[in-house]
Image (cartoon, rainbow, N blue to C red; front, side, top):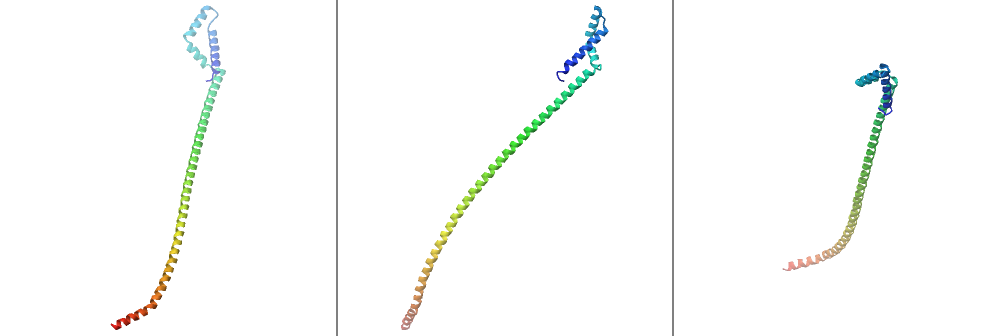
Amino acid sequence: MSRDVFPTLFGALRDRLAADVGAKGSNTLASTATVSVSVYHVPSNALLASILAPDTNVHQSVIQGIRHEKRLQVLQRKRLSLRKMGEAKRKQQQTLQALAVAECDMALQDASMHDEKFQYYVTETHFKAAARLQCTAEIKKALDRMESVAADATEESESMVNCQPCRSSTWFCFKMRC
């Protein structure tokens, strides 16, 4: 209950006790002593009777205090739940940002790896192409040399073919003589 309810409640209880004590006793000293003794002997009954007696102001203030406490509790729960939701959202956003940064880093790393691989592929392909061109040029030179050698060999063989009948005829002649 809130703090302002208690003074109202105790004030109402004090007024009732005073009214009960005043109604039971007289103005004489002996009766006041017995009333005060009877009040002290049974204070819980008098307090209980005064609490149970219908007093709308006390009940209203108690009910308002209870309602006020319930509203405060509901508001505190809502604030707590909102705070927890806010913290959860912040954590989720931080997690998502961390994941996005990690994915971005991974993508950049993959791109750099692919770029390195591509650069390696390009340079390797360039070297291979240059080597093939050089090899092709050397093959052409070798073919040219072979053609020139073949041409020289053809000329020699043609000259030998032309000389062979002479030789064969000399051989034939030589054989015939023997």
